[in-house]
Image 1: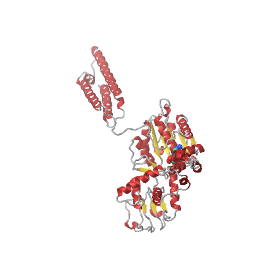
Image 2: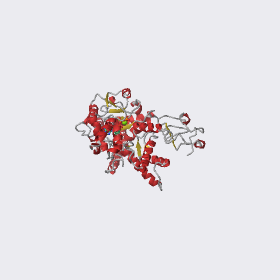
Image 3: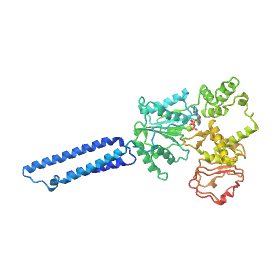
Image 4: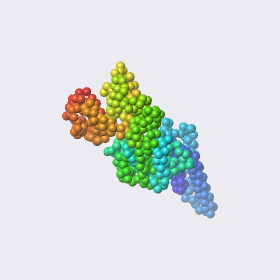
Length: 516
Ligand SMILES: Nc1ncnc2c1ncn2[C@@H]1O[C@H](COP(=O)(O)OP(=O)(O)OP(=O)(O)O)[C@@H](O)[C@H]1O
Ligand SMILES: [Mg+2]
């Protein structure tokens, strides 16, 4: 009987585990349902056989005059039948549970796509960029390569290239190139230094639908991500814009060499950083050749650039961009729609009204550089409006619409970019650097302090604040408190303190130094 109890007991525990697994709300292995049922049926057969074997043996020994132990006698009692009945009841209920799922087996509104499409310019018609893309695809298919470093100057097109690669992986016929059929492709925009591993972890966890505690330790987040990625047949993690080497173990990304078929791609401006991350191969992205630059320029400006009277000027401007896609797109797009040769030669021909509007757009553009990373559009428009960049309007709604138009115009000329988040825009680093340079070169009217990216705890640590400061930005600084004493800033019109989560109170006296 002991044997029987053990077998039946173990079996019931198995059934219990199975029931728990099956009716757990997030059914992951529902496809294995019928094979589990089959397992149970086979177990039932084994137990029945075991019982019959023991029964046969006992009857034989009894025939020879031996007396069975009391436990063994029980074998012939109702106990077995009861155990069998109870298992049958459980199986029935399990079957009902399974049937009640119907076709509604998955969480609503959630489906983890293997590859998510990323918005951005396509390199479909660019032979040189496509060659680079194919080179990376070959590295991805090479078993000897685990980590790939893509590097080159700012604005050269690394992010664009890797985004196109990501989108290609979504479309590629994986039946022909099966090594490119990753279980999941994860895109991470790496935050600027000082690097916050939690922010990297949050992006990966979000993509994998893994819950990580933003307050929790890096280690516990890392082990959750690690366990989840280990379950994937293979993964590709793309770490875009790495400024300082990141320890994959700290993030929770398994080392590709320990997880066959998985890869990591990093993009960086610096080969050093790639090497510190122990890349297996590197690929440099070069400036565009003259014919490629011209093609991209035309794409941004339109056919007008080929007109006889404009073409010589257009070609000179395109050449001046030095093969840097960022410069070509920004300058090209700003010349779009200008169909007079004079406009190309001298863009100061507009009316006063037009000039005022252009001045406002310029101020709006420069203002964006006060934000270190992604910019919430509503917040931005509100600030523009408060600064008086949106013109005179009877209602905020009308001013808001003007703000939206300006954002669209800035996006059209590539001075702002879309992000994967609706209601947010971002500014390319190089464009921001240019904007900051303009800000700081145009004297008092535009001068500002931008401390984005520096971990400040006390705002009073900033030494460069002068009385003529027009705009102060301390977004994402980790500021914990503000001082009572601060430089008198009578000319300041904007003080941005968003995202300082530890800053809970602003002392009244602090505002006395400003005259908003
Ligand atoms: N091949 C391309 N075709 C069309 N536009 C491109 C191409 N490459 C880059 N661009 C444009 O140039 C801009 C800068 O490119 P990208 O962001 O890819 O540069 P990057 O090398 O990643 O720069 P950074 O080092 O600052 O991250 C993009 O916003 C895009 O509009
Ligand atoms: Mg980039």
